[in-house]
Each structure stands twice: as C-alpha cells, then as structure tokens.
Image (tube, rainbow over all chains, first blue to last red; front, side, top):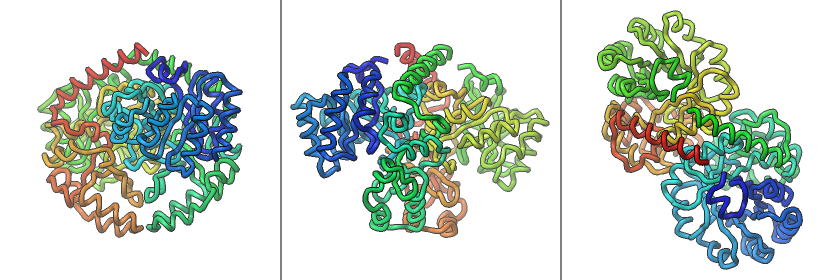
Length: 315
Length: 315
C-alpha cells in the first residue's frame, strides 16, 4: 500500500482518520497513528487550550506522526495554528476555507499541509496554493459537504484529472474493498471518518455510537443546502430541519432551529433528540456491528484489501 | 471480464446499456449488443406499436442478444410485455415497480429478468421474486432515483451482502476504471446510461448531447423529492423546479410546473429551456469530449479496464 501519501507523511499505511468534531481527540489520533496510519486531532470542536492538551497527550501516547485538522472558518483558527506550530505538530489538514491562507505560513514552520475539497475547481486552487496533498471528499461524507453534491465515485477521477497532487479519497470508505476501489480510481490514500468515529477510542458518546451502528440505508441525508450543506442522521433535530425546509424555511429560520451547541449535545453528550448527529452515509454498511478498537479495524481493512487484490487478479 | 452476468445473458462483456427514455432506440441497443455488451431498448418513452418497430429493427441489425427495459408504473406495461413476448425478446429489465408482478409471467415465456433497485431492501425482494439478476443503481444516476439517496459506492457492497443474485452496478460508471472499481466492490457487471446516451447511436437530439458533453461538476442535481426523486440538468426547467422547491412548493404545484411531454421536449426535441433534461452526474467527467460511436466507447473501456488491472497488480 506504499504511495506518495505514505512517503509524504512518513507513515506505513495511506489510511488517515478524519479530524471529526467531538470524536477525534488524542486517544483516537494516537491509536490510528500507532496502527500505522495517520491520526488527526479534530480542532473543530476545541479551544486553543484544549487543542494543546490533546496534542501533548497524543505526543506522549505515540512516537509516530500525527496531525491536526483545522476548519479555517473557525474564528480562533489563528490561535489554533499558533498552538500547532509551538507544539511542532508535523501535519495539518485544513478545510472549509481557502488553501492559500495558511499553507506558506505552515510550510515556513516545517509543517506538511493537506487541504480538503469537494470539487476539481478547488483541487486546482490547492495546487496553486502549494499544498502537499489534496483530500477529495464526496457527497457520502458525514457533516459539512460540498455544494456540487458530487459523489466519491464521480469526484475522485475528476480530481485525479485536474491535479498532479498526491490524492486522498474521502466519503463512503469504510472497508478494504473500498480502499482498493479508490486506488483503482486514482487515489493514493484514503481518509475515513465514519468507521473511526464509531471505534472504542473515539470520544463520541456511547449513545451516538450505538445509534450510528444501527442505521438503515436512507437514515442519513444531506440537508441545510441554504446554509452549508450538511449530512445529518435522522432524529428530532433532523426532522425539525427537514420539515422546515419542506415548507420553504429561510436561512434565518434554519439558523434559529439550529441554535447553539447542537453538535456537542448530539455527538458528545448523546442527546439523540435535540442534538445534531453527523455521520457518513456508509454507516449503514456497519449496521448491527459492535464497536471495534482501532487496531481491530486496521486488521480487517488489511485483510479485505488483500482479498480484493485477489479478486482483481482473477478478473 | 467473464462473470455470471455474461453467462446469464449469453454475452461477451458484462456491460449493459441502460434503457433510457428518448435515447435507447434500436440503433443504440443493436450497436451495444454488436460490440459484445447487452443493449436495451427503452420502452419508457414508447407506445406498444413503436416498441414493436424498434424490436423488429434491432433483430435485423444484430443477431446477438438484446433486451427491453420496461418501467412498470407505465399504464401500458401489460401491452408492452405482450409485444416483448410475441417478438421473443430474450431479456427484460424491469424498474419502478414490484419485481413480483411480471417475473413469473416472463419466465414462463423463456425470458430472462433483471430488476432495477436502489436499496438492499428491494434487492432482497428481487431475490424473493425469483428474478435472474439485480441492478443496483446509486444516487449518481440520471433521471428517476431512489428515496434513500444511497450512492453507488455505498450501495453496491450493501446489496452484495443482502443477496446472492448476480449483481449489476449502475450510477456514476463511465470508464473502465469505474468498471474495475465496481468489480472490486462485488458487482459482476455494470449498467451504463450516461456514456451511451451521448454516443452517435443514441436517439437523443444533438442539442441535448452537446449540452450534456459540456457540464461542469454540480450541473446535475437531484430534485423533485416530494414526487419521485429525479436527477435533472440545469436549465430553465431545472431552475423553475428548484426555485419552487426552495419556496416550499406542494406536490400539486410541482406537477403543474412539470406539465406534460417535458422529457420528450428536452431530450428528443432539444428544447434546452422548457424541456426536462435527464443525465447522470458522471457526465461532467466527459466535459469537453466529442460524441463517440458505441464501438469507440467499448474500445476505450476495455483499454482502461486492462490498465486498471495493472495498477492493482502493482499495489
């Protein structure tokens, strides 16, 4: 599974755990890096002080490379970046903003940069901005999502044509078969969110994990197109938004329904009724399974990937 | 590329051209079957008399197996089935209805049956109904679509787990790489719509083909969720529906906007403003390309498939 992605980050396997709000603390990041992938701490739900605490604990828990994901629309992104530089984190994944904004600053400090996009247009902007790798994330992904609604199957070949950058596929990937399928489509690594959000090491609440391990097809949907398209899990919060949208709700009416602290309430505190629940569409493929450790997930992914290779050899 | 699908239909390559309204006449079906795949005549836009004419011409144009796609919600489906049986068409693909309704009747007449689904639940119903193969079609597909919005990447592994039936993947597939990716995910063949709708042999209008060969990412969207979810191409018709939906339009208001004859006007007559334009999301991957013949498409698919196999062998 060696590729430009394993070389770039100095890791054994091109499998990255997405930096997910309320899921991706130091425990999950360190476990993924220890297993040979690249763990990301999700700064999207952290203050600068909390982020520093997670980085310090992650460095204690693993000697291997790990990174931090920073959503650039966060008002305290500059303070988060300062903490990352002070603590000498080797890798930053940026998202939800322009790749031009921080890439040079991070490079000056010896930090590798990947940027998350949902279209070829933004992938080209990444190349212009000098990022080291691009993450192309399809419509299947949980949480915030691209306006084009391009699925991973359509997006990866398009981004592969649009840029020569090392390419990480994301959205809808939870098995070794899917990792191989992405390789076939031109990706050199994968970022997986859902599968790792539901592991023992994820800091999400038990109630959230149990709910997400019991979803049927169609139990996540992309809503909030008038604000920022977001894939949500069915529940009280989902129903309120879906109904408002069906009745033609305005942006302000949607913002009023969302209120504040909804994703903390849903994912971290396990309030499945009024809380915002975010997970990828591929969760339904895990329906009825139990929580696994990160090490167990990696063993399964590698076995499936090897089996997929045999399938291709025979075809 | 031999599989249970090539055996079942007696064809050389497990590549099926979807039966698309206003695109899939005898010319396209015969060309695909002549190239070694399975061509389907799309009865969705045909009266029984017109269908008979297309079947007769297709039999003259090729000695190889071909089929007819029948959307079961069509009021004249019984008359279409009578024509198919009288003309001894060897294969029928049914969609938009229960697989129980016609499978036994068709089998009694020696006709092979595949049914199109968008979920594992319906795939299991296909197995119960005794169909010979199941087509699992993801969110990327053009035209009518499943309510669950499950993408091909998430759907194929789910249907693979749900049934032991021979499995044909559809939605978002336009290249040999994607055919290989589907094989990796457990499919034994593919159904491609978009790629064939835009060939020389397709009976769609030149204006429609040119428009669809120049789409950017995001230029198709799934709309009409309150009626029957349908992937449409941006244009006057699309804009009218999108705006009405944003304002909370009722089912009746949407039906009034749609009116009658919209897809004939858009696809067959080339009225890009008031006509309904249906194509798959993967069209943007063909952006800027020119029309090809079916034979050229097959040559490209086979070359890409062989190259993808080499990529996997090295990984």
